[in-house]
Amino acid sequence: MGGTRCALVMMVAAMGTWSVRPVAAQDNYEIQVYGSELVPTGATMVELHSNYTTRSGVDLGPGQYTTLHAEHETLEITHGFTNFFEIGYYNFTTIQPGVGFDWVGTHIRPRVAIPASWHWPVGLSLSQEIGYQKKQYSPDTWTYEIRPIIDQQLGRFYWALNPTLEISLKGPNANQRPEFSPNVQLGVDVSRKVNLAVEYYGNFGPVFDFESFRNTEQELFPAINYNFGPDWEFNLATGIALTSHTDVVGLKMIIGHRFGLASHRGG
Image (cartoon, rainbow, N blue to C red; front, side, top):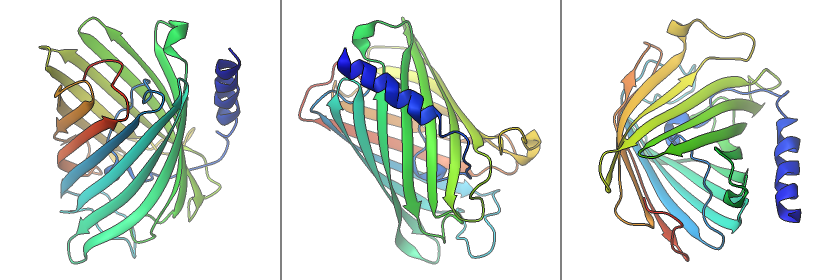
């Protein structure tokens, strides 16, 4: 119980940092709704996130590279240290029109979770992500994200909610209020191998000063998750922009594999 008490202390302490501020970090580099389950203790998960933008409605400002027709490739490596703690590392790269292949930045993501042995009716974890990105890709070069994660499996049906707050640590948006960027996933198992889902990603602007809906970034992703085996992850989706200020991601794919220890559950 000492370890689980420590996890709760870490989660409460992290929530005390919500008074700082953000702007959208590397959203196009890791388009994913997180589930609460951690990588098993002693195992390492390696994932490749790929996506391609077919239309850009986002004005990034002077000196910023456009996301239009840019391909984003992110390597994510996550290691499970205990049944309530893991650390993830991201390396962001892009193939940019007129620029070619370029390194964008890196993030690190510690995460704590309520252990499954507690048998809570919902899964609960808390992710924190901090990192650097080159100013050509983000005016805020150092950013921080806090992401509570709540999910539940109900027979063949699954839902997940990530009410995310994004904070700028260095750049024009530093010392401002957090931006609210909720993510949601609803899915159903249609067979032992295939899960169909709808993913939602939004950004409403600063907390207590939301933008009008038409001026915000809002996108839906019809998605398919395929079970290649207990240690594999595969997600394929296409984006549908709900406002003119949203990048249209024509295709996104996540493929991952666990090493060092078999998964606790399939898919």
